Image 1 (cartoon, rainbow, N blue to C red):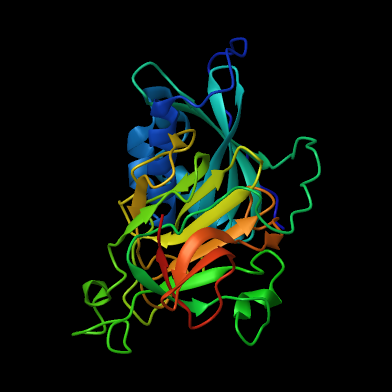
Image 2 (image 1 turned 30 degrees about the vertical axis):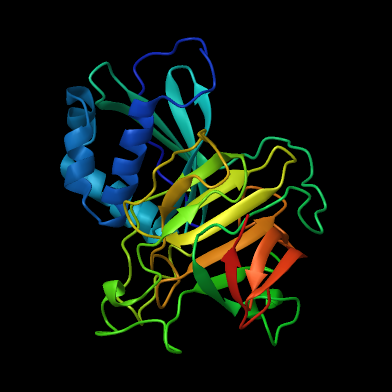
Length: 324
């Protein structure tokens, strides 16, 4: 990997005053990620304060962000608040080709007066728990009847089984008359699942929320942003539920929100590595999809092919529906 130019124009240092992310920093981080991935370096430059603009003119900003950072690392997949350094915020930033810490400092008018790129240094954390299945009672994360396109414990029924971090995952769609859509197959709105409400399967806390990834044209994929618009929930038992490929702009909750069983969280979409609107749903033993080990996700009570079932693990070609 080529060495990275480090930008550090932070003009002041104060003691750490807590480790919660400030909303204004969250908004600027989303703006930065969007502009970076769109190669809109003018938008980044426009967010600078006057000192930053003089110290890092537009052409130099293009060279550093475009040629050196993006040319080496690729698109940003996620930016997760990691810690504070003084008033500045450090984001663990996952790129297509690696992970960096990006420090952002803002002045009193939310202008960037400091940027700092370094290789990510993981803090020592407890090893992720071994998780075989959920102990938390779960409901299906939707109402109405859905179809299990992939699901089960064998590769024949569930191609996710080939990947440890996705094993036992589900791909779920809606069908009518044997098809998942009607009308123009190149429009997301033609698919029965698109825009359907996605619900919290249990009481939980949102530990990751990604929005702003465009929905694909059906048949195309976005392998850079694998999970697309995503929510990860942590149960009180320390189990993690990932819901991926959500509709752009549909997330109703953010990181840190406490959600209740059955609460509408987002809508089904077609973002990320997805060829048509569907919900990718999985249970995992840690928040980070890339480091996770998948586990069996059983549902407390549902209809499967018209029959009431309890503590049930759906499999490929099941028609499933929530019941109380």
